[in-house]
Length: 357
Ligand SMILES: [Zn+2]
Ligand SMILES: [Zn+2]
Image (cartoon, rainbow, N blue to C red):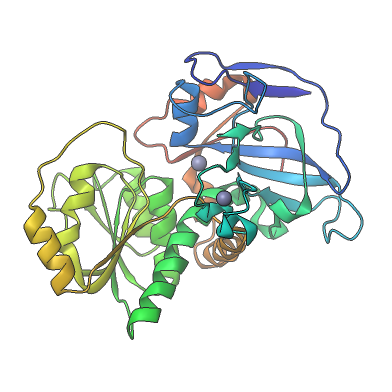
């Protein structure tokens, strides 16, 4: 069967070729890949700046944002042939001292010894077929169709949103009204969607112009859009809830003053490894202490968050028909994966299509 492979650490090593058919082991399902989304992590992997091959090998199959169809499922798995599923990404470290991994939360692994399919030490889904145990497969409503390829990035935001809501409600009587989302990429737009589904007033802030596709996509779910060229970061605030999705240090630290008293700022954007910034540290600390401010980082997602994400996608499809599909601005064949990596300013999400949904 066909697969995309790369040599981690080697830029330009991407290849599309034939590899042996996967054979399901005991208790494993056989899946047919329909489409695989490409994100910033994949761009880094293809550029040789990130990722690790499975132990004992020097080649990795990338791809972690997958929509698949069940070809064959083990008896008693609750899965049936033909069903649409999305596989989760992270696998537990298996170390006895890791309480989160032992309790179905490899997304919270404390040893950092986890593997991630398509990223870190385990093959991903950029291939025609793959195998997986049912525990790591999340069934998605058939009505979502091709839009279900957005579930993996949605799960990442759903985790942060659920977590923020749980922590905030545990520490105060919290009724958030105004939210700010910085960054209008796939994670930012899906975050705006989740917060709109919760009934919040949402402002999306990004550097793209006010008549860009991203601006229109934000407006289509009822969010206010502010372009960084025309509005100051924090305009329209203060905000009870901030989802930081750029990872750009000036935006990360610049958004803190816009946080309302008792507000929560979720950090979802991954910064590069370089860069320093001068920040008014005393004022930032003073504000956070004197207003009970909460900042936390969030990455990856549990099975729970995938399930919550699937429900949110179904709700979004009912509320704004066609909106999710429009976020997929580029669909390419496997041998044109390079075109899914080099995106234009009007692109949101590119996917590699392996088979029709
Ligand atoms: Zn991704
Ligand atoms: Zn662990």
